[in-house]
Image 1 (cartoon, one colour):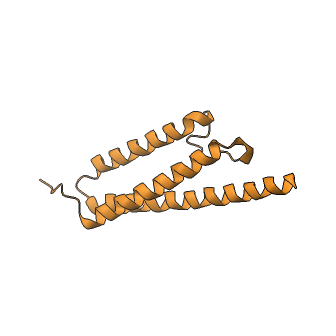
Image 2 (tube, rainbow, N blue to C red; image 1 turned 90 degrees about the horizontal axis):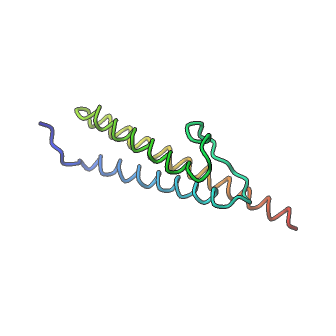
Image 3 (cartoon, rainbow, N blue to C red; image 1 turned 135 degrees about the vertical axis):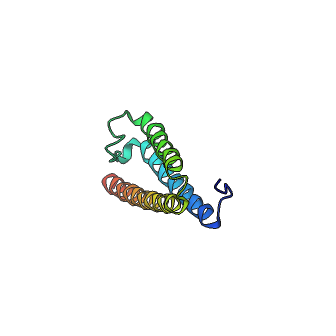
Length: 114
């Protein structure tokens, strides 16, 4: 039976994932709650849904994928750790992109007021 104790790498991968996903979700929630920013979700898996339901749908799909990955890759923890770390990095990058779009749109809105 495999040891269920998380290794240091898996804890770091999980921390990276949680930080990246949290930042991505937070920045997405921010621009969705400010319609004057005129920024819309670009992810084709969830952009079909109404704005108020995109975050819960996206988070549910994300958790489903991570749980399925843990189940299918139970005997391959290094692969699952790499996937978790990579997903966290991608989410972090998406959060930075969201922040850049928010700042750009805020500057454009400010210029149009002047």
